[in-house]
Image (tube, rainbow, N blue to C red; front, side, top):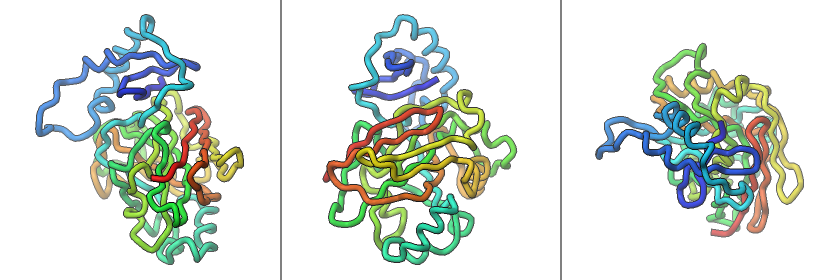
Length: 287
């Protein structure tokens, strides 16, 4: 099932070239209290119930074309966005060779040595919202990745069975402004975390470890690889993250980028594709 948020926070089911408005399925979500007694995105935490209601509503739902719809992030309220650095060997080599771009500490070792980092939740947008460059005079790079959406509470879990904690997958862009500041600081700018165009539920992708993906800027392919080349695979990423902090429904793991990261400028259009998930266009503008 492909589930999206679109237009004015409508809930959608994507079927072919159409989005079915199934916003009425939200009525099955438990009433929220304040302060919340549980952490996590309410829709993702109750995904099975919402899916059951979506199936009931779909035959009579209003349809609109995917083309022209304003696609938002498929997760509305993650507790955190987790970044996984230098997780493809060719990107490790790329970072080591570009000493004028990557800080020295990012040239030393791989993800296994450096650990993960966090991005601000306020940086999260959907593809139709676009990336707004806060510092266009500095180098701003795209980093294309597979996004994992956690489906249930996970705390210090083993690698075996880690895929069972995934609600679904999306395309992710981990945007960054280059410089000497801390990595999390430079990657937490508003609009610098893009997720979309929808969430493909985990049952549709039984093996996320073999997915082709690519990114083109204005039609020129800049990045192309396959998740089979991850240094730290998806099971290990989930297990490792959960050893340091609990994961909650809706948390997003951006699993790492391959070689080919490069600068974008206002006016550019990034076209992203991941096998079995889909494709999305993301415009770059000045803030």
